[in-house]
Structure formats: structure tokens, C-alpha cells
Length: 221
Image 1 (cartoon, helix red, strand yellow):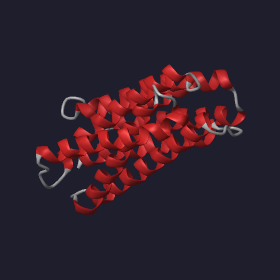
Image 2 (cartoon, one colour):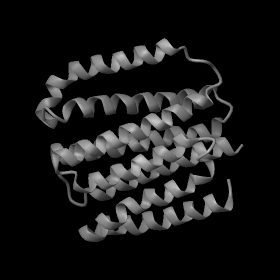
Image 3 (cartoon, rainbow, N blue to C red):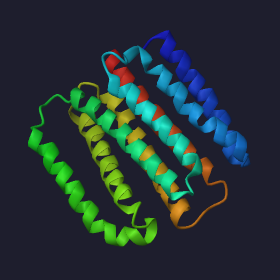
Image 4 (tube, rainbow, N blue to C red):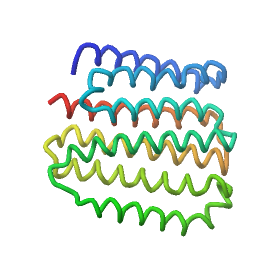
């Protein structure tokens, strides 16, 4: 890992701590301004690898865009736009993860996974429409399915790959990301809680850091 990357990871850490303080104190204007800056600096840290591994940069970029949309997460259209942005971010990281596997996965396995995702989406839509609404439910279902796939892929990499120590970080990262999304979903659509943004963001930022940093370390060694 280069000095440039380390420097921006440190800046990301400082910015994240400042943002979490704003979340805890419920300083809304400061929270809204500082939120996208965290992932922006994490995205900059991936620039040295953009030629060889563009999915790493693009994943961080779409996460940053998703953060901007989710500043207004109480608005359905903004929540949907944020969900789509994070969905694309996970697809970018999925491409990078596939390249790290020590065995070949036939193309039809991906097709089957996609079809299963569509099937699960259709089955859950009727139930989840009550929670998310007709427009948002399909996006939320497929996004959740993608997250589970990413967690499973990271676990497989940790068990079978050549970068087991770094892959464990990836598993922790996706687990933390899933916890963050569960809190976000519950507090947005079911029951709000005091200082909701603090637990959402601390788990989210840990998740993003571990995912990006583990991938950078894998490609650096």
C-alpha cells in the first residue's frame, strides 16, 4: 500500500470521526455536509489502483453517490436512488471479488443466481410492499439479495483464497454493512430511534473501510 493511500485512509478516518460526532450530537446541517466527504476520501485512496482494478474505484464512487442521495432518506425517490447506487457499487466490487477466486465459476452459475434473485424478489414483493411501498420494494429485495451474495463470496474467499487474513476483513466488512442497512431500513420504514444516524453510520463506515481496505491489501500483495 502506497503512502498516498495511507494518507487518504487517515483522512477518511479523521473525517469519519468528525461525522460520527455530528451524528451523535444530532447536528443535522453538519452531518449532511460531512457524510459524503467520508467516502469521497476513501474513493481517492483507491485512485492508484484505478487502471488495474477500476471496480475498486467505481464501487467507492457509487457508494459516495449513494451517500448523497441517502442524506434525504425519508424521501422515497431519494431512498430508491441511493439503493440503486449502492447496488451498482456492490456489482463493481463483485467483479473484483470474482477475479480473486482461486477457482473458475461457470457463467451459468451467475445466470442461476440472477434468476434466483428475481424469484426471491417476486416472492417477497407482496410482503415487503406493505413496508417499502410498491415502487421501492423490488429494489430493496434485490439489493438485499445482492448483499447476501457478496457476504457469501467474501466468506468463500476467506476459506479458499490465498489472502485469507485480508478476506476475513472483507467478511467483517460485509457483515457490518448488512447491520447498517438493517438499522437504516428499520428506522426509516418501521420505528425511528433517537440518534439513529450514529449506529447506522458507525457500522456503515466500518463496513466500507474494511471492504475497500481488504481489497486494496489483496491487490498490493
